Amino acid sequence: MTEGKPMVTRQLKLDADAEQLKPGLSSSGFANKVFELLDRSEYRRCDKGEDLEDIYRLRYKAYRFNDMVPDADRRTIIDELDDAPNVYRFGVYVDQNLVSTMRIHHVTLETPISPSVQAFGDIVRPMLEAGDTFVCMSRFASDPELARAYPHLIYVTLRLAGMACIYFNAPYGLSTVREDHAGFYRRIYNSEQISEPRGYPGVFNKVVLFRTNAIENRERYYARFPFFRSTETERRLLFGKVGAGELQPLTILPSARYLHHAA
Image 1 (cartoon, rainbow, N blue to C red):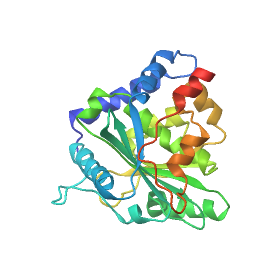
Image 2: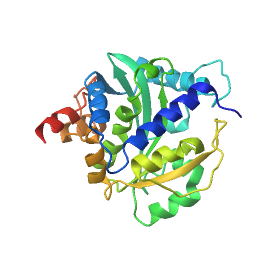
Image 3: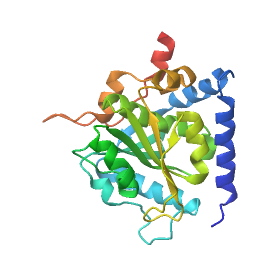
Image 4: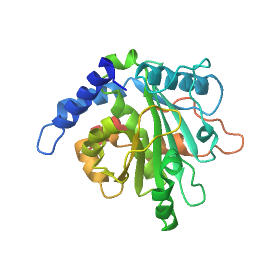
């Protein structure tokens, strides 16, 4: 399968950003651009209703645009992992417009359910049995039209995975990513590839499994990417369980800017 020009352009942009952020190079201008986008952004945890249907449609729109999935009459992408007890689905909104989405699973021996377990169970299950826990991110998708106006959107979206690792005290982050995106995850997350390429249900592309040590690399992330910082309140609003009689917050505002000013 050949990739279209828009995907190549976006990959070149990701590579350029990662190159700029090599140790020893100034990243203040880059970080400021991400902070500016964060100021216009909000997160929504999508558990039901129109918000949930919107992110399913956005997945399909993005994946079809990049020729990753076949055409479908329903024009949504949803699978059994969206109903797992350990799933968290998010929409990222800029100026109140849905622009990207991400799905996160908190993977433990008690809840061994995620894309990484599904595709790489022979690798992940022994780690779970050894006592490890993971945050597994998947179904990242961005609006192919709006994302062009927000070239730093991926970093606003990826904040969710880092915050999940802290909230759940998960030492590792797992990601099943396309082979042509592997270099980005190596450079940004200091991730290690722990699998060979494999097929994944429902998509044309093969994927590889990456693991990052979230605890060991945390301060390194913050030094290079201060916009990844977050407050305990933001993390609780994103991932905490709502008590009886309480309402799920409609939107959660990023807190990194406040921590950056306080530093």
